[in-house]
Length: 93
Figure 1: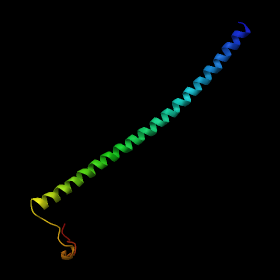
Figure 2: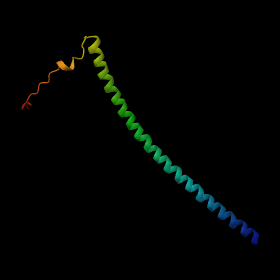
Figure 3: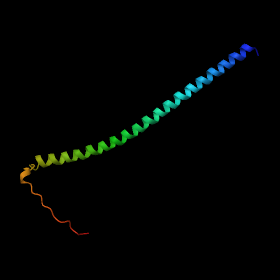
Figure 4: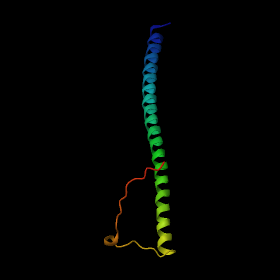
């Protein structure tokens, strides 16, 4: 082989090696980003489930309050008329 051919193949080898290093580095960066985003997705999914449970609980309380006010004509008493009675805890099993 001529000297030019060897130099050409040597340059081609170096360029392809640098391109491979660049592609691998970009792949690792993107993979790390994907893992981070998947963790965020999982955390948001857990938060969404918690919020749905909280919404259900609040909706149940709102519904009970609405039924008590409209169907049973119940109202919140005046705070000055509320009397708290404290008792000793029972020792029953």
